[in-house]
Length: 439
Image (cartoon, rainbow, N blue to C red):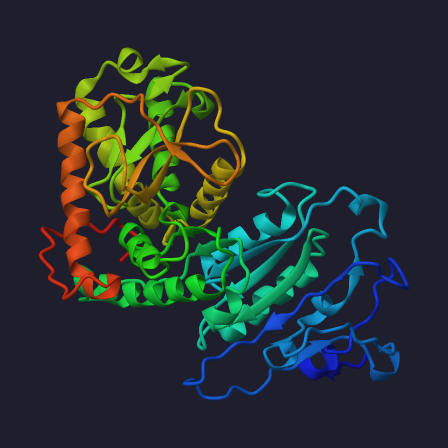
């Protein structure tokens, strides 16, 4: 079969959906191939498909809002107009949710995007649009990701856009999953990584502040995620600080697994597990408040030495052990934990249980220093919001561990003061606590 080369401009003329000859409520997919003015121009990529020129049907152009043509162009099948009301299956579908994912060409996203598109995260009646943010260097890979999404035929995935300019990719987004960050290279100090990645998240915070939904929920995955989340929220003053989360859910999942292994039960029997503090080796997996089959962990696992030493180290070093075994970092389980973190906010928390998330500390009931992002126990009514859990026990041992992580986050905050609008930076990080696999 002959191969036809179809340029992006050809895609701007799109084929009407077979669902209806006169769509009553057409929704269009557009691809943002976005660039800032400072970047050199990039030749428009060519999309290839196995269709001879004489087999291509005459296309009908959808209506495009005034001024949109200069910024956006369609990506393949996502250019096609469609009508949610024309098909019986879609009559109960909800309005589109706009989801932005940064670092969309990376390994974590390679697992996460397909979970989002399948309906696993937001439900089988929730259509979504994915807005994928990459870099100039990763743009070709980003096109490959979009092609795989296109070929997967997810009925819930109604729109896909790709770009490198956060001010265009983040337009009207309701969820921002910020995964992309620079890994630490050989010889790089942790302070240097805080500065480099902090600049990325400062710019993304400004973009969210300018163009995202005022109630956008932001989950920061790129490390050091707690301080990156703080930088992001400080640069987005028009978005509630409570809407920003640093991902510590993978640490919680690992803690549940370790407790289940020690107790000889399946991990669905483990509840009320909290990760306190920073996503680093100062993190505090809390066994004091955790339960197994509804019974306090310390009454089930009576090996205090294991709980205080081995349990914590097993959780902290799990990522490093995985790299030694497999030769790569934990992309798939991280993607699963992002899904868990989202679902914890959109599904009511089971009665008596809670989940961990790195959130803004202002007004917290635990005596933790304010104005940092600290992982704490949360509950949600399923409306995207959360409240901090008040009925937790903090003994002297747990308090001491929490204070160590608090001190580290305060030091990180001083190190990025130039990125949060708080003056000159001063780095006095006490030690290198980066988790294995994040260097």
